[in-house]
Amino acid sequence: MQLEGIHPTAIVNKNAQISQDVAIGPYSIIGPNVTIGAGSTIGPHVVIDGHTTIGEGVKIFQFASIGAAPQDLKYKNEPSRVEIGNNTIIREFVTVHRGTAHGRGVTTIGHDCMLMAYCHVAHDCEVGNQVIMANGATLGGHVSIGNHVVIGGLTAIHQFCRVGGFAFLGGMSGVDKDIPPYVKYWGARGKIYGLNLVGLRRNGFSRDVIDAVKTAYRIVFHRLVNEGVTLTTALNEAMEKVGHIPEVQLFLNFIASSQRGVPLAKQEEEEGE
Image 1: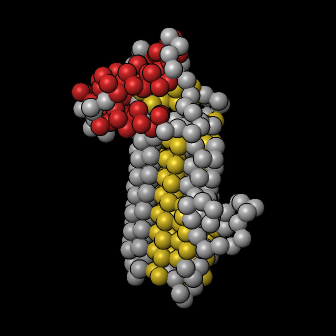
Image 2: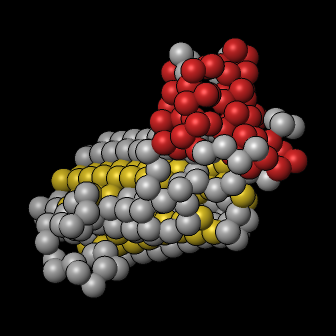
Image 3: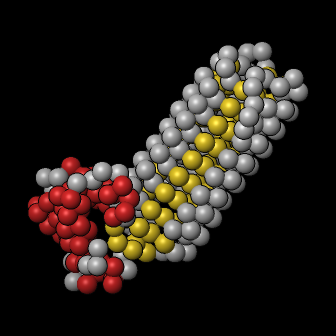
């Protein structure tokens, strides 16, 4: 978007806090409780409402709606917020709704994220840093997404689900359970397809750490599915063997703390990774 300054047709409330070098395109509407950081660009026909804070260097493309009231029948116009981190890109027709009083009170999106066209982030969601949501990906309310997660196009994530950091979710998936860190997931009510090794290597995980995560993964999912041990037994065995590695601790603790449960692994993938 090659925009400079605030277009004369844009409606910017006098109480909005807009950095001097922010560009706002034609016919966009900026509400009174909006803050936009330096170097950000707001395209044409964008609506930013509510108590919304947008960081520096953010790019929001045409027809996006940020900070609107949540799609929640319990919402009674209580004060709540949206916060978006630096250098995040929000493409066409994305919707991000503010939090609720009975939830976190805030919907957050981290820095250096990319939300492609038609994505939806519902009320009270927490999206980490450097997250990619491909076209049409949808988060129900109260969803938590870790750092460096990739969510494929048209994937829908149920309310209150968690997705751990560095996970990869294939396109057109339906998620109704918690997805542990580091794994690949796919399917309408899908399964785990091994570890996201490409993502781990690209993000600088050492060989020793990857090997330790592999060991923990095999103990948990192989013994759980093929040998019928309890989840607690498998987690304890993995913790005893490789739990001294912080990344493994995070993986095992995520599974142990799940309230919704985690998907099973596709059997032929368990040892292939």
